[in-house]
Length: 301
Image 1 (spheres, rainbow, N blue to C red):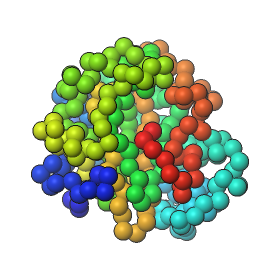
Image 2 (image 1 turned 30 degrees about the horizontal axis):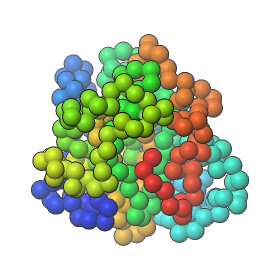
Image 3 (image 1 turned 90 degrees about the vertical axis):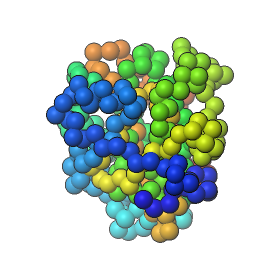
Image 4 (image 1 turned 180 degrees about the horizontal axis):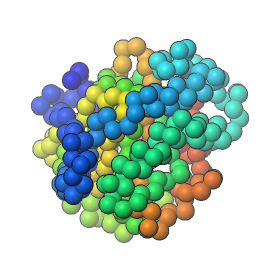
């Protein structure tokens, strides 16, 4: 792999590992679930249609072309370094909701193929949240390490996050990174149990802002890889993850989305379902970093 960076620093090569491909276990669902339980994640190579994912990429980036943030051709995802989004779209939350609900994007993220995969993972019919975290990360951006538990477990913890690269995302562009073995860090997980971060943020696990230092202190590695359109990664609520820095040399924007899935038989967290989901804070799609113009600074989550 190419060099990985976190907060501007190269990650020592000995600290970087490649996410293991579990697509070969798709024909053995119990083994697939056992791998998820053991590793805290699954990487499934090429399980979606590349063409469908690339259609989603063009659809999203074409909307960003229209507000002056992405250059033509849209699918290349090259940032212009400028934005007219705020002047053209006075309701930024409404704009990002409309981008996030594009039919090609939803076909890839919420369609039959993904539903079949997640039903296999859960061992029963799966249902996705309607609310999507669509992320467009230009040069210099990253998402810090965190657990998903405090955000999405108000109803129950049988929730899985699917990270979908919308196009090819090499390590230079800042893809997903998972902390190896973090699903067994009970000293961090146990104190979080039984609370909802939108109601009480005093017990959120503090993983710091530097994934390199965190991994060094834990004696573990940061797992990632060069992703291609059609790949997915998924993980439970107790796996620490974030992203690498986008340090691409050609000003390409990293495009991905996170969608949470659960067994359809279980109660729904009303914040993330319906025609107008409220999201974590109640602000709907306006709360997301993706709703901000591409030229605007943003922080984790």
